[in-house]
Length: 242
Image: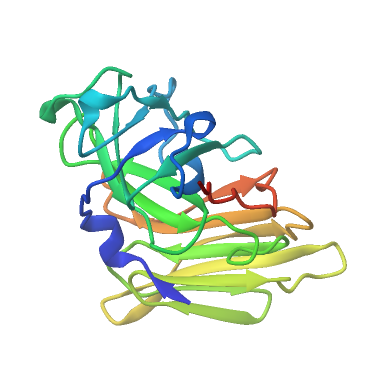
């Protein structure tokens, strides 16, 4: 179980050197990235990853942002833990940066989830360990991004979440039809109120990501999910050595 509440709302920027995998720097850290937009847009903006320290020394690398998860990923080579994103491969100016993210120091496979930022066209980014070790096949990854306590019930098993809490539910309970009866609740004014229900199929050899969040328009807590139809390979990118 992990807590992601502060990682969503406070993003630090550290120096990095970023190049495409074919031109990887000896000794650099290579990471495999998948970019996911939390909100479904009619057209996803093109995003380019840049060197944050010396952007004039290189060009940005195209990193597709999608509103679904599949096998496609981008491998980049880092000399530090941070990345910034713009809409162009050209060296960016300060006001052209759409998003910044600092990756955990450990790990080589990450899912970057993009949320709307405070200004139009900007993003906040959450970095999640995308490896099969951290997020096994056949499991649900559930996170509470709301400011209230929430509860997920699958059949008769309750999973309680404080704000920012994450739970990986491996081999979830199902009935003979291979589905789980799902109910979700939010603690409002000290009382549990049901906010949704449905049937969740067992992920099988795939994975599911689910987010509790506060809808900015309605101010209500909702649950939104993404099915990982083709998780990344279990083989992580190698570190380039001299």
